[in-house]
Image 1: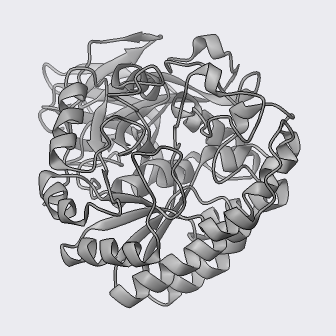
Image 2 (image 1 turned 180 degrees about the vertical axis):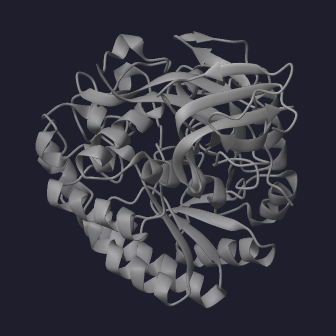
Length: 446
């Protein structure tokens, strides 16, 4: 065995080549060898024998609203990164909006980095934002290390982050493409939303009707056309409409540089089960019907959908009113995302290797971190989650580490208990106890 400071041994290690019994050697925070389970321990190395618990790469969540600074009563780097670590997530990329200021200039990025620096329990990177009036700021943000740029095609819900019309989308996309960047897009068409019935009130069926599938489908078709024209790299955020899947699949066959994510709530919750007035289930685009969910799972299996991320978007409890029209739209899911997806995946015949591909390997690749994150492989950061996949628990909001413990998963029985979480070979969480923050601020690799 190569020189090592630490060896983690398990009968079930998920590697890019499959699941096998192995000993994983770590030195200076990096994986130096993945060797047979019974390989001799090098002199001076510390052994962590995990038994039959599964050793998997730490998850990489590329869609998180930390809201810090500015709306820290909603969430913050300290609480968000603790919740993430408790759920087996070792890297997150923070969205540019819901913080004040939004990450739309280099100066605003520096403010956010300064706030996060001593509060991050896991590694944290940052998205920039594309607004109607900040095209000049996109290249400087790219050079400062953001992983790409988020744009809305319909109102974002906060005044300081306006959406792009098609002309401004083209302008921003052309600029981002000129330096090889990535545009990630909240794709709902505002005209479809304006034409939909807007009743308000507590009935979930009324809210669902107000965010029709056609709004997503049209916006995605427009984005595909723009990306094809410019040979741009684009990513569709939080896909919920299965009707858009044929458009996406055809675009991929045509060589359009498009990737797509969906979220645990679209894969595990259904419109039929949302109680009236229960706005902890509200998000945009919305949780849709069970038949729609089945098609999302099929698209994950065949690669039309690339990855699964949380879109963790919390708020204070008072903003989750019983009126779906006025309640804040967002699901808090950082701590529960792995367990939620694994619970439904195992029921549908998928394995943990699939979950790791969707929630770690492909998300790391999306943001160019696949040389460092997303796999138990030599040369990668020694970021791990240790999981008891067959152990069940019932979600108790009091046990969550999010700042506001409002959750659509309350009372649900989920499988997959995270025993411990490791960041660059250091255990940052075990038995519910956290170490001091050890996370680093990440920037895009040139």
